[in-house]
Length: 110
Length: 116
Image (cartoon, rainbow over all chains, first blue to last red; front, side):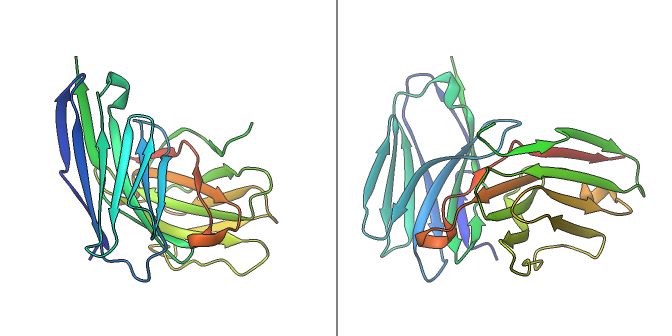
């Protein structure tokens, strides 16, 4: 069973609108949680890395939240742009290995 | 270049043939990972190299898969007698040792393998 679950699997939003992606994990012990953006045909690129003590972290229009008690994280995209169309992957390290979620595919339409 | 590079970017091969995929990590990164990403699925760990330590091969799906790394530089992933289920994007990542789970991994663009 995958230790990192993401929802929704995909979503479509209009340019300028906001959206929120969810991630639940069971990896233990927990050290940090990472959100990656993967454009079509490219490798994943790190958006944020959140440690146990961080509840919220922003990177431009991307804001990640973490609740280590409930083992949940979210990624909020504000004022979406066409370039935000990509797969967003939640990742939780387990020692030197990474446990990957299946990703949420976001499509932003004009 | 400053990032992780992989070659070829695309590879189409016939079932039963062998293929070799190449990864050039970021200079100075001692750790190197190979992953497989099937269409619509998450990344699967294949193999991990760290310096001169014995590699962690626990993710290799069968003995048709093997990988080598020369020192802390280039790595090659070899798939022998390819099967159609080997069709996927093969991603390489490198990192420098760090706190909190092995350091941040930087990914290459991947090699898209199609077995016909």
